[in-house]
Length: 400
Image (cartoon, rainbow, N blue to C red; front, side, top):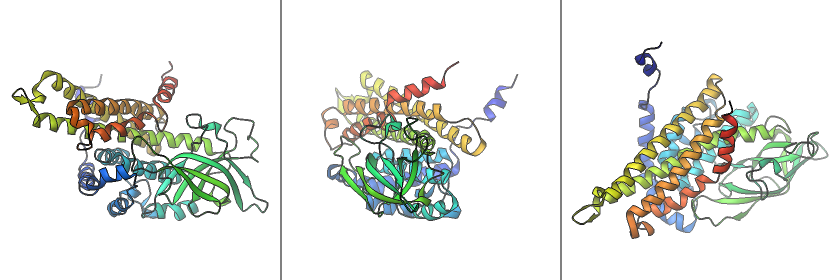
């Protein structure tokens, strides 16, 4: 039997010196650069483009990119910490970052060939913004039902894409998109539901590509969510990731990764809402004492702190499992990612709603950030697969 000391020696819940340094750097950036413009950008639905340029001075936009392509790679727990700290102040900026790093850069890093990496990762490691486009009007949760089509042109140099993509984060801000469409000439097209699904790298300047409607959303209003219009859009054949027809596994693998990012975003929302409620509860007095000393409020704060700590452990464990999968050949992290996203998303919604209640009437105004956290939290229960989908994924993974 292993001694307890031996077991504990393999588990370390302390952040490394580098992780702590990065956390503090991102927190400083969020509070000094993002916070002063957060409310105005939310009200104006204005993407944080100037803030992004300043953020790129940290080189953290390149954490999913190898150094030889200009990146500055970090471990996956550190990536979760970065997203958490951004979302603690500005969830809109955090999802902009999540998509750039976890869906666009990471997907090209994993599945791109050397020419694609050299051409696109170097730009994504600079200040160009990445996006990811899978969903359509009739294929959100059911991604295999997409109808966007791709057909090789007569001289075999380009694919011609037609259709409309929806719910694209960074839709109008991005320069480079990982986008999915079905190759109508693929032998599995029309035979299997996802048959022919192909992943393409698309640039904003490609002929036949345009940005469509910008969504008017409940929350994350400083994040631009748009449709993309493909009208005989010409994409060079060399911009196919892997080979035609292999796009669906790429998409599902990307979701495993991005769900951890959204879980980290939800964690940051919870932390930000909790801190606002905690600070207010120690300042606001009723019946001669701070409201934090009233049992009904104190119980809420205690439950908030406990739920957030549990979320943090699940998010970090999922990030650790992701790294083990890619670097050490460990099991795929699908279950851990879905569990973290499910729990952290529900926690964000609960904590932010309770934070509004703790602040009372003030919590319902824009004088305090909890109303924005409340609006922003809801999307963490929807995108990257709804909570219902996460339960389906988890249930499939826990069979005897």
